[in-house]
Image (cartoon, rainbow, N blue to C red; front, side, top):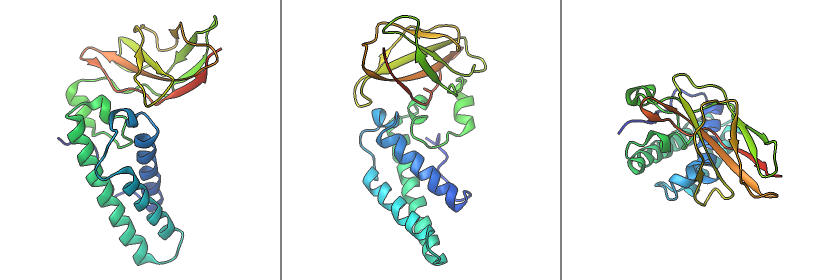
Length: 201
């Protein structure tokens, strides 16, 4: 299993900080939290290394910056290995971790890419929303799912053929919903998009 880019040594100091924060956010409160409830190292350990690294970056001690950077890289490497083991080759799950996927992992499976620029607005009727995203090359359809609680199960909705008009009816008014979309190609569905959210009216 080698689907995630685990070597982050080429990133600049601030870029490594941003990537680490993105990974932690994806796994703690983002879509990755649904698929990876427990990680080794724990997310608390990851956050501790991020905080220590950020403190070092704010200072002038070059040696301390390097040592805390190396510790953070090692922690993220171990985390990526653990996520790959848990996902057991499921690219859709790995795409929610905040780590970058190796291109060959996606292309080798023949999967379409995750939709980008997901937007959500109120639909023409009460209890409806309209989703739209950038068209995905080689996609023949788009499938959406929704939930009121990121820790709960998602409800998948029937696929449609247009990325510009994905209508979801029958939602509860006055409730905040989270939405994701994935494209479907010749070899099945690709990874889920980033999350969009809206209160249904």
